Length: 114
Image (cartoon, rainbow, N blue to C red; front, side):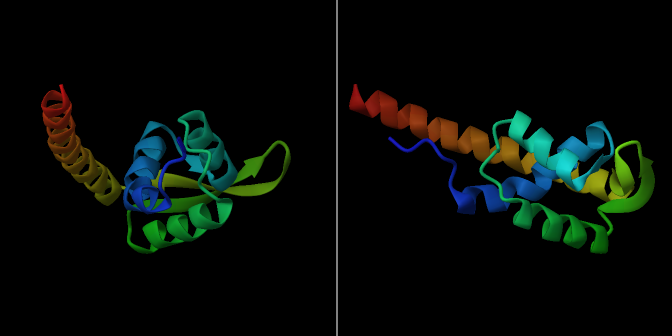
């Protein structure tokens, strides 16, 4: 059985997941990618992360600031904004509702199969 997460499923949740990570601490693009890997989301290509960061910044959910790096050139770190905090809270609420509905359906199907 293929245990990879569906790309379409990830696309619908990636912004919320990224907001949750950035709410923990500001991060730069590659660092964010590393954190996604840490949470088991290693299937997300870097080419998806950077355009989404740009869109989130354009929409006022995050703010990018250049910071010096000990390992080379300055890096653009992303900080969650108050609008981003509100979007994160909405995402969590919607995710919990969806998860409860899907879990209920799965449990009913499991009961029907037994």
